[in-house]
Image 1 (tube, rainbow, N blue to C red):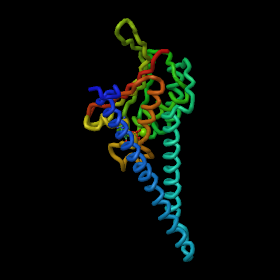
Image 2 (cartoon, rainbow, N blue to C red):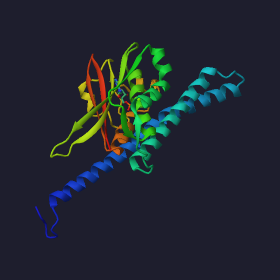
Image 3 (cartoon, protein in one colour):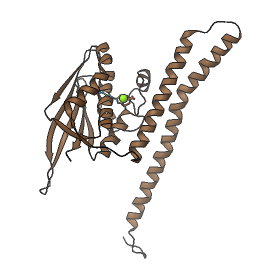
Image 4 (tube, helix red, strand yellow):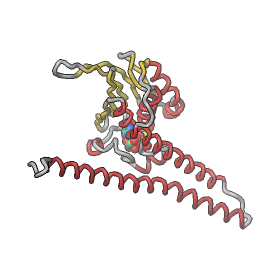
Length: 255
Ligand SMILES: Nc1ncnc2c1ncn2[C@@H]1O[C@H](COP(=O)(O)OP(=O)(O)O)[C@@H](O)[C@H]1O
Ligand SMILES: [Mg+2]
């Protein structure tokens, strides 16, 4: 429907709705960040005060308390690092340096950093490179691989098998064929119930908050992955079957 100014009223209503949604998301985000920051800080404050009291009253300092303070300080730093990273990637202030990269090399590099963690759980990480090159920013691609493989090791039971797979794919219509390099991180863990899959890439969305925090998760890893793929004009999706495993699929355009 057109109004006197010739603008489309439905279009305006849609734009207003979109603005309202963005504003709601912003408010929720600030509330979530505050909550996530407050949890470790409350613990640091509590244990520091107890330590101070113990020392003032002539009792010794319990090293366990100091360990908890260090652990929660690290959590705060991780969270702030992820938040800064997310805002950099999302806002686009950092220019991407998209280069032709060797899929085997980038996969080996990311997996090497997680080797000790995988070994400790008896988890095997395989690399299968049917596609040899990918066009991506090296630092951001390393973040994608590290986040996805780290999650798979973390959320799968001990002795699971993870495969980092690279394939080529062609899709498109009307004569405009788009070539993609497809990265899949596949695990044979417990899988994720279908009801969670839609929300998995949202900031701070975790299936088991307690477990994620315990293992040092910030709940931002997958939303960082999603924004990295968006910056590359690519996509990320997830498929999962409970009792069978999970597959994260990242598509990078070949140009
Ligand atoms: N491979 C996987 N198998 C099962 N659950 C997973 C897997 N990867 C991610 N998840 C779930 O998705 C949630 C969000 O992941 P992520 O954004 O990386 O946050 P976190 O900091 O908790 O790891 C995790 O808390 C976990 O519940
Ligand atoms: Mg994670």
